[in-house]
Image 1 (spheres, rainbow, N blue to C red):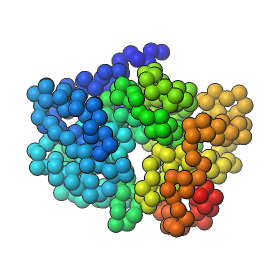
Image 2 (image 1 turned 45 degrees about the horizontal axis):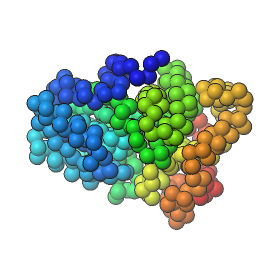
Image 3 (image 1 turned 120 degrees about the vertical axis):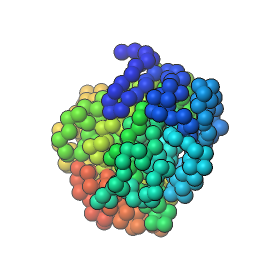
Length: 384
């Protein structure tokens, strides 16, 4: 298998894969009906070379284009409002969401509200109904990930913090899907080792939690297992050598597969991580990494044969729970993931609040073992 060969995939949305595919951005935007796209990214990516290259390529192809980079590491509602104003004032007709999870979340959220009068929180995934919109009320969207972690490039779902309620909200609309995604592993070259590790474990958690959801969904299960194989094999090399393009390509592919697989659902790692991030503004991937091991132990008795299957995907000869959990502990240690929440800025002052909010998160409902608020608070306290 040549991980560096370009390829075009049609599932679940059109995907342009391979080194250098960022060069296809102008033609993809034109095909999506854009003449004046707004490139949306996070503040940390605003000055990185791929943003300038994207704008130059778009303008060189005769398109108008501008950049909005006011997206926080954990996007908040005010970021989306500001980006929407830039979109409307500039007469833009499409969004290119480029960056890590925050940049893509910001761009996707802007694409939901920029062309209609519906408020952002009306798109809450947990709401009983979605705004009654036609496709023309939604903005054409192209997603370009620059980290191998979130896997969010094939869906409209975006995580945005509602600062008034102090919760992370998943916003989406069933009619909104990216017109295309670009997976260019060259964009991930040189990502710092710590961010490579944090985002890489985020992708691994997506796959583990999706596969652990007890619903029967063989398509998502197959993608999750393939993601585990790819990520487990490539992540150490990607962390150790930021210039290894094959490892970066394997990670980007695995991240995408894992992102598709969690259409099936997620679990307690994400339920807690979402709300820890909302309350303490922690890095999402790092928070997932810190919470992975205790949730694996919490779910131990209900995973059944799934543990062995995941262990096989990791290439382990011993497929017992002890071997599976031990291998994950060893990987986290190798990647220098902190063991304690206090090490990432979490205090003991609001853990009960976090537990209540985590229990209400959609990801908690698909965890293979139901957890009470008291059990969630116990997991958080033990990890503090």
